[in-house]
Image (cartoon, rainbow, N blue to C red; front, side):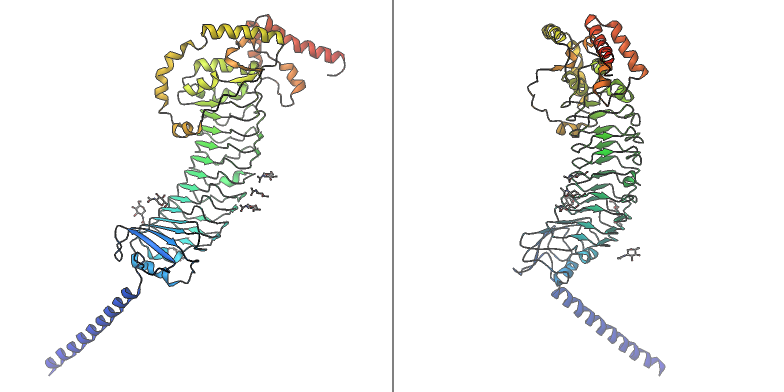
Length: 508
Ligand SMILES: *[C@@H]1O[C@H](CO)[C@@H](O)[C@H](O)[C@H]1NC(C)=O
Ligand SMILES: *[C@@H]1O[C@H](CO)[C@@H](O)[C@H](O)[C@H]1NC(C)=O
Ligand SMILES: *[C@@H]1O[C@H](CO)[C@@H](O)[C@H](O)[C@H]1NC(C)=O
Ligand SMILES: *[C@@H]1O[C@H](CO)[C@@H](O)[C@H](O)[C@H]1NC(C)=O
Ligand SMILES: *[C@@H]1O[C@H](CO)[C@@H](O)[C@H](O)[C@H]1NC(C)=O
Ligand SMILES: *[C@@H]1O[C@H](CO)[C@@H](O)[C@H](O)[C@H]1NC(C)=O
């Protein structure tokens, strides 16, 4: 009896299991039938159309580009859940058309995509990246949110993206960066925030980005930097702050960035650099400060950046660049791959610049030599010296002996093409059209060192920024005087006589 009962029960059980399977199968068929394949939307009125690469079959698309049309799409739209039909997408881009609208991050879609590596949204009207919009996407490596309308990034907007390497937020209207926005992003190497409206960076904003290598903040509205802004960026190699509204930089601003190699500060309003602004940047190789409002450089400015070998100071209002200024980096400038760009300033032709003659002969870099050969300064000396100089210049040009060793350097030129900074500087360093030189401008290297005036004393009357020469500078002057001819003596004695006269008149 017992032996007969068992098969009957088993049969019943098997039947039940079968029925369950059948109903599940039915459900699944139904699911596939009702779920739109996002790669194969035939409805012309659909708000989203996607073009899929590799294949359009269910779960076969790898690369998908979706266009948002037709008056905008709501968060609740059932179309979003259709992305479950393509769960193997690796590359997903949303482009919002002018007649469309997308005002939020489609966070739910991202959860279906277990292999997503690259995600991008363009031309949306997203205003705010809310907390946890991008959370726990373990596979995503690159995210691009260029050309949207983003104004704010909430705390935890980007949270726990263990594989995110590049995050691009260019061309939005972000006005402020706050702490904890970028959180648990251990692989992030590049953060691009070009062309936004950032004027405030809270201290500690980047403190979790310990592996960040590149930070672009150019074309924003930053007018103040505190050293706390850069907390945590111990591995940063390149910082781009071009085209902001910086005017004063305080000591130790960049001191947290002890691996920084390249600092770009061009096109700001900088007119004050504190003596220790760049202290701590012991790895810095390239510093560019072109198109600012610098009138003078304080001695010791480069003491903290002794590795600096590429310096761009074009288009400021500099009158002087003394040997004391350049001393900490002088030996670097002799090296093959270095450069120093100084054109577009208001340098006076005087003995403070005598070091340029020396560097021109010691430098191995064609860029340094060319820059120095083309270096122009204002010569406002006694007219009789001018006459003499014109005569001298003529003889120099005729005999062409000043640069006679140029041929020996042709070989170096090739080597220079391997320049560390080549890609950048070659495209940046546009040869500017030669401005017709003003009456009083001279090519410095065509003025013999001993004819450079040394107006140290008059400076103290006319130039508030003048600081007394250091021991070494004073020694340089003495040497110059010893080796000079009568013109030199005249140029140094003249201010002395002038001062005595002022003194006698009770003006000094
Ligand atoms: C990721 O997407 C961006 C924007 O669509 C694109 O520029 C980039 O090449 C893509 N990267 C990869 C690895 O496919
Ligand atoms: C993200 O992952 C963390 C840790 O794995 C978990 O605690 C958290 O709930 C997740 N958040 C979301 C929104 O899924
Ligand atoms: C992160 O990226 C690496 C290499 O790009 C890959 O091998 C790894 O599987 C990724 N991790 C996850 C969780 O996808
Ligand atoms: C930039 O931010 C300022 C406030 O800091 C605001 O007045 C201005 O309208 C913003 N500009 C744009 C283009 O969003
Ligand atoms: C820059 O920010 C200041 C406030 O810090 C604001 O008044 C100004 O309008 C902003 N400039 C631009 C061009 O948005
Ligand atoms: C730059 O900052 C100054 C204040 O430091 C402000 O007066 C000026 O409006 C700013 N310029 C721009 C273009 O925002």
